[in-house]
Picture 1 (tube, one colour):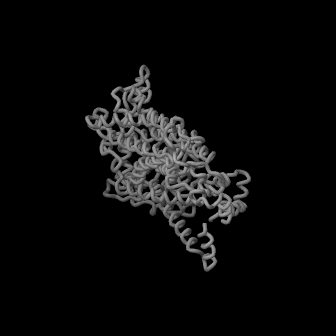
Picture 2 (cartoon, chains in turn yellow, cyan; picture 1 turned 135 degrees about the vertical axis):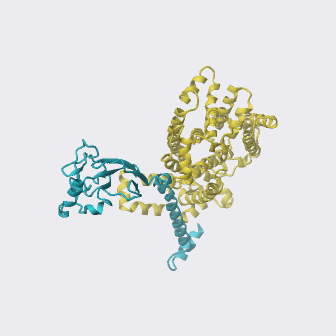
Picture 3 (cartoon, one colour; picture 1 turned 90 degrees about the vertical axis):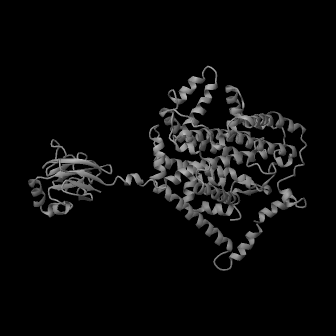
Length: 424
Length: 184
């Protein structure tokens, strides 16, 4: 178990495996993707678990979603009741739905931590820019999928959330109203809207799977970044993905699943809105509309700007700006561990986004409005002003010569490290 | 990594090392857990509570005149209710059991001789046999004729000719009174 090659060669010696491998090299493909033949930096911390956790959540969402779809009816007059039937009549339907509902939240938790990990350790920098882009595309697809999924139960929040979000597009001059009519398939959110949202909600997760495959492909091109943010210098800096990181990922998965299961079984509606247990009523808006927690910061940005079009542009920009992050951050040092000033500002940025989320959950009045505006300005200030300037003015700490050096100490040479690897 | 060497030597003892035990125990625990988590998904495909709640129906049979057949829907399946004439009963009861593919006396298939109640689904591949309407073909035995593959049933709903292996199924039913039956 400790070494990779003997187990894999034993694996390939099985005649059936050999027969298939000769025709379709799927076993070596898996082995090179996340097996013993994929060398990963040996200093990856638990922050590196969240990519695989996000992958696990995507799988759980697809599986529970497929089974939910078997009992769901995408029709304006039947959808709400079909969801209640899932809750009351379908065997374990309550479990499927709570797994799916809370799964969306935990998917976003995993992805947001994954994203912040990437920001802290500079994982978006050369040569991983495309890897980062693909991640941002996954985030956008997830948002679209989550939004459309939230519409499907056809409760009050579903309906009015759909109305508000689709109306964002009416902000665009000239063509805005036509776009909204096109999105709706009518003159208000109604059955045609529900039908197309269901269709797309089923489709997009598989598109996400496709982009995830490209994300992993891009990752394997240059390998994982690591907490030191320096390139691996040779085999002494790496360990095989299997068993070291498969086990580490599985352990992390176990912990994550315990927390997730805690919500599914003991607080299934913690992330939900009670108003969504009221059937959609196109003639009455609930007194207080809030999106799901994972959209709150963007929602706060939208409401902070007193102009409809500019608000929408700012909201979309707040995510799209991530695409140019690799060039806004002018520092050549990747890891925040060696960037004392950047590190402080990144934590402030995190507090800023949490503050935006807090503002997004409250009506835009008085104190909240002021805080929302300050936080919105800071959000963009961080990307557009601070990050480019920090690269110039910050004095980074000295980088270690290699990943092995801080672990093994200066006395051990790289050659000694190689020999200690080879002994196993 | 040094542990590996240690456990390898420890493993030379009896059946295996502590690490082998933990590896197998954790693996087995995970495998059983994963298998158990599959069950809710599989079971969700079984009939739901509201589907099961529809499993009994009550039918008023008083308007059915002698010689008339009606079809009612039970659990999404057609149930044939046949108010048999004396001649049809006679025909069903005089057949020798040796001639039957699925031998069963008519007495075992009815509670009251004039009322034959069977599930109207051909035991071959699930089509609904013809014979409920007066104009329908009824086959050579006066019962039902399946248009899909030509199975023929007699006035007791027993298979007489064609590919079907068994008689038309008799559902669980009871007479609540002379005018009403409960199916299911």
